[in-house]
Image (cartoon, rainbow over all chains, first blue to last red; front, side, top):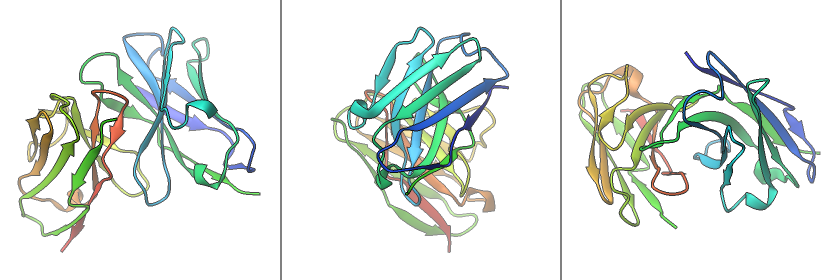
Length: 121
Length: 106
């Protein structure tokens, strides 16, 4: 059973960079044909896809966040990471990592429990 | 860009009711449509993929239908554990979720 777990600071100051890591257990991040994604959810609001990475290092980002987002992978640690720069209060949200297959119909089947990140001075 | 419109945004129903939630895409997405259930403080859970396929372990009272631009999620007989928020998600292009339908107890 694949499990994902987010980790990182819960408080980030405005204009700084938000950094989160997702650790995958129960299977190798390099096995199979999967993308590894980040999704966020502001309190009381809907879900927003941030971006994804393949274990080859290939990435795709939400156009609305592309200029500020970097997703990377460390296969030796079975982890992938999110960096979001120049954060504002609008970036306060629960951040989820999730797995999505590299094949139709591209659904998110495994999710982390979520990490609340608050942007505040 | 493809837009997803879910309706209703909220719904009150009773245990045993049949409930239908709809999701409409602004252009055809074939059957690239998935449904998730989210309970407070929890991550979303996949219910239906490819518009009508039931994810393993999900009760058969959940079903999905549709293709092209119009899709539905049906819960045939509501159970107490089904009161949650439901999201559709198109996977035809950049992943995009609907705005959600909050299902509350009447």
